[in-house]
Amino acid sequence: MPGAEAVGLLAGPAAPAADWPAPRQVPTTYPGAAPDHHYLLVDDRVVPLEVRWDGAAPTVTLADGRPLDAALAAAGLPELAERIPVLAYGANRSPHSLALKLAHHGYDAPGGTVAVPVLAGAIAGLDVVVAGLSSQGFVYADVVPSPGTEISVLLTLLDPGQVAAVHDSEGVGRGAYECARLPGFTVAGTGRRLDVLAYAGCKPVFVSPVTGGPLAFAAIAATGRRFAAHDQVELMGRVLAETGIVAEVAALVGLDAGRPPAEVGRELARLLSGQWWYSHNTGDEPMATAVRAEELVWAALGRFAAPQSTAERLGAEGALLSADEAYAAGPELRLGAQLGA
Image (tube, rainbow, N blue to C red; front, side, top):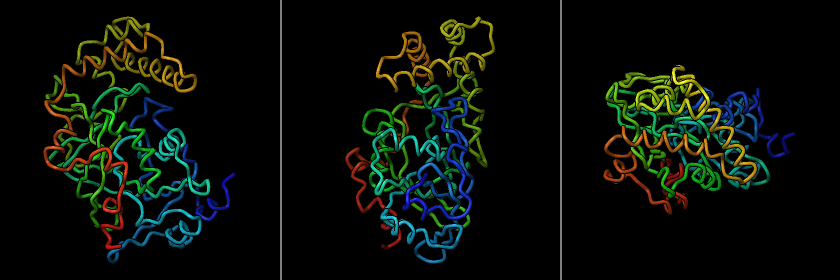
């Protein structure tokens, strides 16, 4: 049951966050489903938000018409201006992923209530593409330039403690992702553009030897998309087939070499996901077969990688933050800095 603070934020229809399953629990769905509207995550519940932007600052209200800032303040939680806008283009779009990440990475919710406002919107000139293999059992995403493309993404408004937990989940400063400042997130229904933080991959993305370009995630709606797009199972199969390792992986997961690549990819997802959860719950190392399969895929990805990583490109453009800056989440990174607050 939600606590008293959470009850004050649960206005109108509230859906379970698990209605949008986290890819870490259902890896073949990555980047997973997400609401297509503004929402507020309250513990393990999702409530819709209304957003208007008539002046310098947004008017964000709950379904009963109460201002979100007033409800957050009444619960002893940071208001919108104190929060850091962080782009969500992969699993972080999912309210269930957010809830699990905050729980698993030590977020100490004020008053025991988790509250994350999330704004729907779009950003132009980028696409969401296959970057690497997660030990949780899916190929994961990064963003790359794509002139003429506009992607529908979400913007999480995180308090400083939530920022630290989500940074931890993304391996910021540990060779997985770095943080960069990106301009041009447009808040849906308002036309208002914001500068945002975004996770920039430290490893170059996969470049298909068949198409000559990255492979995009079809689950991320886009206009003007230039890259071939597929769902997670198809992407996993294409990576295995196009890098020439599908037969080796099939042998590792106990399938005949002639099985379709997507079937082999699905079985690989089952192996890696099961061993990740085993390790997560026991602290033991995963079985040798899972380790070998992961090493095999990563080596293959390295043979068909872009010449430069997203972090390297954004670093050359002066847009990258140091890990210390990203974790500090100082006033200059908060929404209030863009609102004159």
